[in-house]
Image 1 (cartoon, helix red, strand yellow):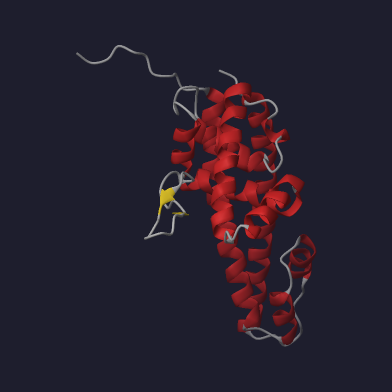
Image 2 (cartoon, one colour; image 1 turned 180 degrees about the horizontal axis):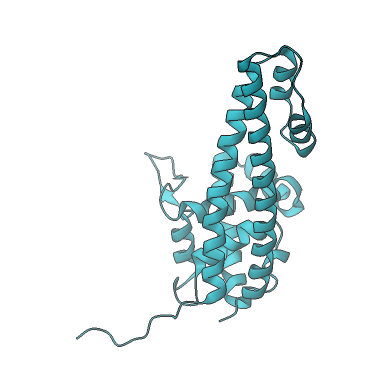
Amino acid sequence: MPSTKALPRSDGDREAIRILLGARHELTVTRTAQINRLRALLLTGTDEDRQWARASMCERTLSAIRRRRGRTGDDAEAQVRRQEARRLAIAIGEGTRALAANKQQLARLVETFAPGLQDVLGVGPVSGGQLVASWSHHGRCRHEAAFAALAGVSPVPASSGRTHRHRLNRGGDRQLNRALHDILLTRWRMCPRTHAYISASRARGKSDPEIRRCLKRYIARELFRVLNACAAH
């Protein structure tokens, strides 16, 4: 007979976070493609265009590109190039604002679903949203080792002869793995405990990839406990 155990019902906040993460991915891919197209367009233009192409595509640069006016005697190619550059600059600016709004919405929803999660060092609205979406609900992962396996940060034996070591896990939820990696990068830069661990591990002969693997495993354990403790359910 089929099991009569009820599955966890869909949570509105969690599903909203999933939707926003999907929208963010699409916005990011589209904006990156537009920036690449704008740079390629400017690189084949005038000397001034090539200077803009090498500049950071911040709001100041985009605003300058949008304000540019044509010159007397411009041929059809120059006019179309300028118009297309202006259109792309406008679209990139809109994409930047949409991403900022998306991040604000994620921050509010993550705080509602898992109060205090974003107070953990390295966890922001985007990585926090991915943690919530992948963790999903109490009971999806029976223990922290299962959560680490889901994230693709569980150790994979790679020993040979008398050498005993583990390698990076290439499986699991790659978006969750990316969230843990982003958290790790923040801690790698500014966490004293992480700095102490890195120094001690290097002294024992571990490589940086091995150190990152271990740290991501520890971070997964910590965040699994935080999610279980603070997530609304």
